[in-house]
Length: 391
Ligand code: SF4
Image (tube, rainbow, N blue to C red; front, side):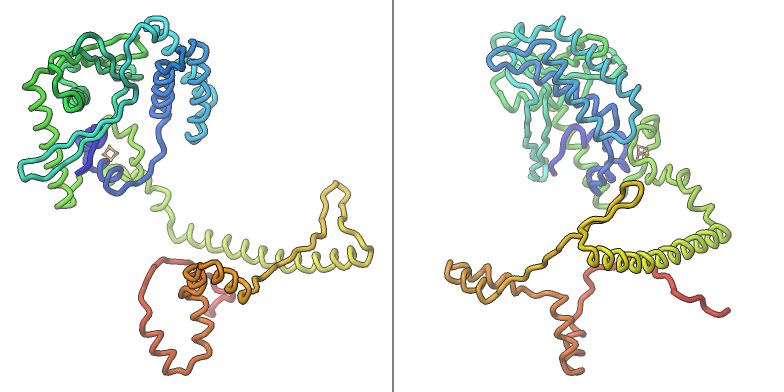
């Protein structure tokens, strides 16, 4: 299995969410918090890039504001005032960070560092754990610091940081990358940008083995759930931030009210309105066609290319041309260029062409071909009658 910290974390948080997101791959819009976090992370990466000089604070802030603008286009309906609050908060975090951590003071080895760790299990099956580490610094001879930026408000205890699973995974990933490193010499830091606080911890050699075991245990649990197709929802405070709440079995009844209230009376109203609109539409279509004919005749008789109404709206006459290819010539050109295969592709089987030919065949031949049809797609459509039935 190929997995990541975020997938394992989602599974632990809620198996149902894991199913929606990882197995069914149901796309969900990213929350404003997630987009804000990405924009801040992108600005942090930019801050530590130098070509040849590090960017100034103004450049970092400009980079962030630009990214935040782009991110805003991906959120639906975030109020302008709220978007501004986010932007100011991000700029504040970056200003504070830059002031306290001028980028030239650090020996940065990598930013947004991709890793893949191969984890064989006891059955000899290989699993891959992939992820991205925000920043890796060299802090001494054979000593490194892994830094993960957090934009959340919540500041964890030292105890929680010592047991943080994400940092344990990053520790394991770095140890795989540089096996000669002393595991205790890798500093693991969570940097809380809102509070400008860094909480650091370390992991022992024994902790490395425990991390590997914990990952494999979760992978085993996921495999069992997949085999049984059993992904129960785990209702918690986090449901309020879950993009799948409306389709989640634990919550969807709350969103069904509209549908359930659609009773016989509402159905009759909907049908009445549907047929009224449809009838107006077809009357409009007929009338539009009549008007077009009259206007066209007037323009032709008066040799006009454009006519205006009193408000300035206008109708233009445009000559439209349709062309068709001379296939004998196309064949000649493609064959001469040695592209017979391309020519053959033009004649590939086509349902529409077959339907035209079928009409010309004998009933027996047609029946034989029809019996070879296979169902390729099934869907429901509504079709409305054009006349009422007599009751
Ligand atoms: S709404 Fe809650 S229970 Fe449902 S999938 Fe999301 S996190 Fe799980």
